[in-house]
Amino acid sequence: MEKIDVCIPTLNAGKTLGVCLFAIQSVIPYGKIIIMDGYSTDDTVDIAKTYGCEIHYCKGRLGAARNMLMKLAGTKWFAFIDSDVMVNGDWLYKLLTHIDDRTGAINGFGLPNNFLLSNFRKVMLFTKLELGIKQRGFTSNTLVRKEAVRGIKLPDVKRTEDILLQQEVEKRNWEWKMIPVWCTHMKTGMQIIKEAKGDFFEIAKRE
Image 1: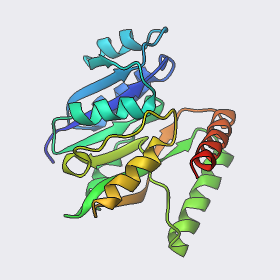
Image 2: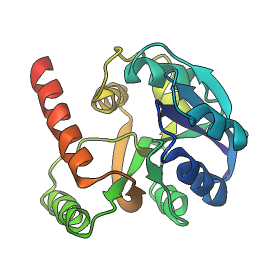
Image 3: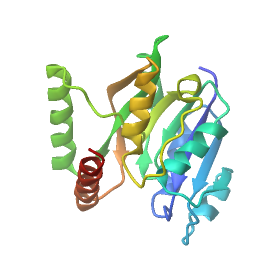
C-alpha cells in the first residue's frame, strides 16, 4: 500500500502519546503524522516534536479538530489514531484485506488494558456481528478514504463526532466497515465507563 498520513487530535496527552507514536512509526508506512493540538499545557507538543510530527493548533473541540485534520491529510487513504491508542503489528494489514471500491472508512477496535473489560468488549462485538446488529463507527483507529470525507464539515462537538462522521459518509453511499482487529486502548476501566456515560448523554441530547 502507498504511504498514508496519520491524523491525531491531542489535548494534554503526554502520558500516552509517546507510546502511541512509537507504535505508529513501528508498524504503519506513513507519509506524515499530523497532530491537531488543543493547546495542551503538558508535554504533549514536546513529545510530538521529538517524533517529527507536523503540529497544528485548534481552539475548537473534537469536531473542529477532525475537520481540520481531514483537510490536512494529503494521501488517498489516511488514518485517524487517537493519542491513547497503541496499534499492533498486523492492524493495518488486516484492515486492508477488507477494503473494496465502496469502502469509505474501516475501523478496528481498541481494547482496554484490563482483562475482564477487554474480554467483555470482545464478546459484545462478536455477538453484534453474529446477529447483524449495526455497530457504531469509531475514529480511534480508523482508515479513511479521503474522497469519502471531502467537503464534510462536522459540528464542533466535544464527543461522538465519530457517529456524525459515519452518518455523513454513509449518506454519500460509502460503506463504513467495522472489523474485529484489536488495538490497545491505554485507558483505565473508570475512564472507559465515564466516557461511555458521556457519549450516552450526548447522543440522548441530540435526539
